[in-house]
Length: 187
Image 1: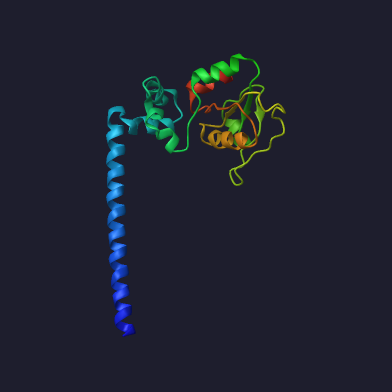
Image 2: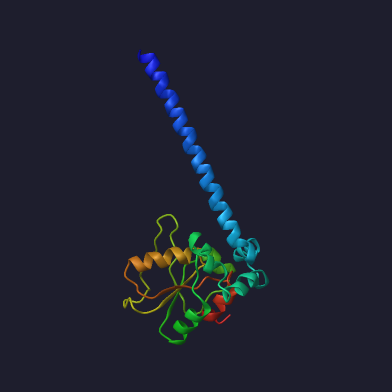
């Protein structure tokens, strides 16, 4: 009797697992179709690819979509965990004269890429997802503009500093986002 019961349980388990896999597959198809429908009007693969390239010409498609809502309007930059501040936000903070610019790149990157004069160098520790806070303003209300090479580490550092109590933290991207980098670098 136990052998018969055991085989029925195995069969029930197999049916349950196959039904679950089928449901997950259908959900994945629906999500993929919904995303594809949203991406078509913007030709997003070109814009997404250009986000990670170095040259200003390659960054132009992303910059061109900003005014029309672009990738941020679709929520794609947030989904990827990567979003930079707008040129207008950076311009307003920098023009106040009180902003602290923080360079999160390592020494080897700083040696081969443009460096912002007067920026505080606090390298982002990727292993521990943290950074040292010495050199940052004691007043946590002073605006901080973070930058790395393109903005990914700055996104992580922004969240870290906000958890530490800093109230105005902006992601300035970096040399790979020239339309933003020029707002605070003087380059």
